[in-house]
Length: 144
Image 1 (spheres, helix red, strand yellow):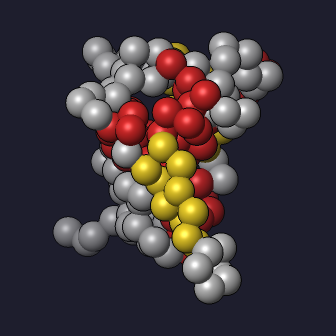
Image 2 (cartoon, helix red, strand yellow):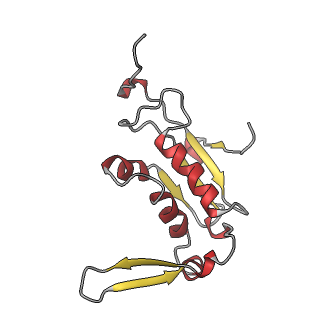
């Protein structure tokens, strides 16, 4: 018996549509990260981009437990004294509420070149319109 290692010819990508309305942010991000990496497939190979393309709608209606809406996202501009922060609630109320979901998923993936490629297969939209109907995405549900 030999160990199976996927090649680019073996990879089959699907399009998945996920509705984020009423779903807890951490649970949603872990599901999306698993789909992007391809860990849900029996032929998972860690060094190949095996994951599906994921479309997330209603990202502005995602739920958070406890006081997580008041927690900050921090980043640094690269200049001395350039640390900046915004609360998750400020980002959700702002012009780009989908960034909360994008950041949560990004932090659940490993920090390497492959994960940066896998993040390009994620599309997050604040409302219900996504413009990807031609891809004919399959609606994801937690029940089989």
